[in-house]
Every structure is written in structure tokens, then in C-alpha cells.
Length: 412
Image (cartoon, rainbow, N blue to C red):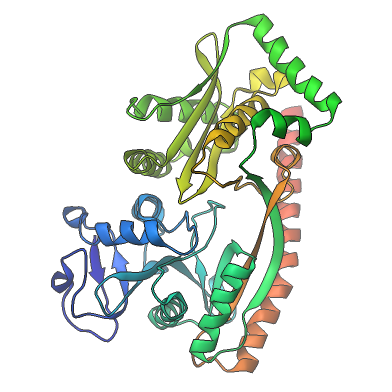
């Protein structure tokens, strides 16, 4: 890991070879491509992750570092920005991609980069003067990338983040942030006994159906739900998950993690790092000893974020994914250190939305760069509002045509 292109400072990256930066304060870009220097800055990054004012699952070192090194597109379009406070500690950090004309935006903006992982674009912001840290992150990012605004994607649409962003706007002297595409996705509030939750959450008929599915499956073979224990070898679990996912529709579509060596390496490295810190949960549902459903989650602070789920389609009539989610819920409700769980599913997901009835409000939030004239910022916001329904229509049409093409091939 190396620190590159520090703003307001022309010293070489070797001058910052420590996990703190005494004598330097400002905003800089990180380059994680130098394997020989992987320990550089990592300790400060992890400290920030453990003290951040809001959970930021995409920005913690255990996720973002391997994600950036394995899946960032070539060139300078994506970068990680870090804010260094006067005392030499990290104050804020996040990854951004520059979106311009090639991405359908006539005026360039910096947007939260998540590499198609829909967790949350919340930046890591430390507890010491967080308004100032976020303001400096915005100012530094837009200067580094030459953009007119920052688009924070899938951030909490709640008073905590809204106040933080509004205060940052005040410090920057820019208009109030604009909220775009508010939505809600399934979540789980803990602090309840599983049986109490189960009985209150589902009607009697639905509870009976879940029990019937589990009983029917158990009639045909030995069924077990296993929660991986810390210290147990992780590689076999990862390989089983990749194999299970690639055997289903994601493998046929080419979107399974195993279809990309870079994606597979990212997953293995990220889960290994999370496991080292005790922040990984991994479940599997087995039938006669072989996995038919698997799910993992990361724990950041007091919040669990679900990762990917995979299941064997040969067992679809028993809904193995649903059965595993119910057992994962049992685990999460029993953890006194977890106060909530975020499904990280698309809003309106037909499965998880009907199981987890709590909701986490999310939105994209747009904030102007320092020096962007208010009329120009208003034009950027208007363009974002216009392009979103157009993008959704184009995406729907694309998938409709693709399904039709595949259907025609199947009939040929």
C-alpha cells in the first residue's frame, strides 16, 4: 500500500511510511497496488474502522483493500481518498469513481464506488470533529478527480447521516445536499427471542408452511444447519460456496463469483481478513453432508451485513434459502453484541422482504464541490433525476430482450 498524490504536499510517498502521519494534515489518494508495502497505513485504517461514527461496510480495510486491488478498473477513474488530521491519524476514508460523459453525465461527479456490491456507500468518518472530516473528504475528492459534486450512493437516509452531511455542506459553503431515489430494504432489529420473533412475525399458516418444508426435507435425508466456528479452516467453506453459487442461475448467466478469478480472489481475501478479526459469520444447510444452501455475513460495529446467499436449485421445492435465512436469524437474535442486521438486498426483494419485516431507509445523496456555482449544482441534480428513470427503463428493456433471445434459442 502506498500513499500517492498528497494534496498540498510534494514529499514522496516514502515520507509517509508509517501507520500515522505526523506533521502532515490534508487529503491524499491511496494506491494499494504495492504488495511489498501492504502493512503501510493498515493499522490506522483499521482503527478508523473500529471507531467510525457510522457503520461503513464498504470502506473498512478488510473489504475495500482487497476489493480495490482485485476489482478496481484500470486507470485513475477509481481511487481511495483519505483525510489525515493534524494529530496524524486518519479522520475519513472512502472510495470514489469519476463519472463523466462516458457514463452518461455531461458534468463530472465523484460517486461512491462499490464494484456492484450493494452494501452501502457510507464513508468511514472518525469521531473527532466528523463534520470537518467529511467536508475535507468531499473537497479533497472533487479536487483530486476534477469533479463538480459528490454522489454518496446507498447511504442511510436518517437523521444521523443527514445531519452529518448537512453540517459538512455548511462548512464547505455549498447548497444543502439533494436526496435522490429514497428506498427501504429489509432489515432485522435484534433484542428479541427467536420464538417470540417467529410467532409475531408470521401468521399461523405461514409458520406451519415453514415447518412443513423443513419436515419434508428431513424426511428424504439427514438435514443439518451448521454455523462455522472461528478457527475452523475457512478455505473449504469458501470453495463450497463458490461451487454452489456457480452451479445455479448465476453461473449460467456468468455473474457467479467463480466466473471471475479476480472476484474469487477478492472474496477469499476479504473473508479471511474479516475472520481474523472475528467479524465473519458463515452458515450452511447440509443434506446428507453436502451443502444445499450457504450464506455469509460481516459484522461491523453492532450491525451485521448479509453477504451473498447460494442454494442448490435441485432442492427448490423445499426453499432451502428461506430455511437457512430463518436459522441465520436465530443466530443473529441470540447475539447480544449485534443490535441490527441489514439484508443488503435490493429493495422489494421477494424473499427477504417477506421474512425480515424491519426496514433500513437508504438514498443516494448529492452534494456540491466547493466552488461549484449553485445553478450548476441544480443542473447536476436535475440531470440525475432525469437519467434515473431512463436508466431503469433501459435496464428493464435489456433484460426483457435478453430473456426473449434465450427463449428463442431454447426453442431452436
